[in-house]
Image (cartoon, rainbow, N blue to C red; front, side, top):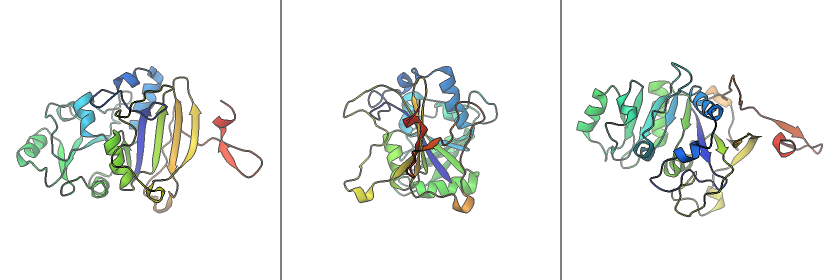
Length: 258
């Protein structure tokens, strides 16, 4: 399975203006064409995963508004199953998987979720085991491309368990600041360089409202045929753009020409 972190952030890596606040304020800075890009990316993956807090704060549908019948399966991990049964992802006709733990298992609530035509998976004892979750998503649901639109905590867990193959950022030209504001990756963090997750820049594209930045895992390969690179049929596209500086070094074209 290929796992891609897809996020809209400020220059300083913030996702929102504070805990419990919606990300819709940031989205208001994008044009209609920018929003089409986000939704069309959803149409190129089989699964989209967000955290419980995103559901509680924004109550999104997580659908592809511009292409019919190209909606990904929605995956919501929640350690304690504390998600409202009235959430949009549980109330519409789309496919949704709620993921919880043995410790957070509530058979009555699981039954209510399933009565709504949604699925529920148990992965992990007291914390969601994302390695096991991805195995089940691929084996049971045929998901080979997973998009993670998580907050700082969810992103931390998938990074920490070594599952992220690619990062795509739509970086807005604003500074938010604030030590308590949610960043791209929060969680426990690492205290030593040897533990950090390493990526390489493969693309930079300045757009009108944002800069598109794409990273790939430093040691990622295409061996085994388990995942593929996603391409887009309409602008803006995601494709490698490099120039050579004459010294054997390839650099993103955007460094030299906007």
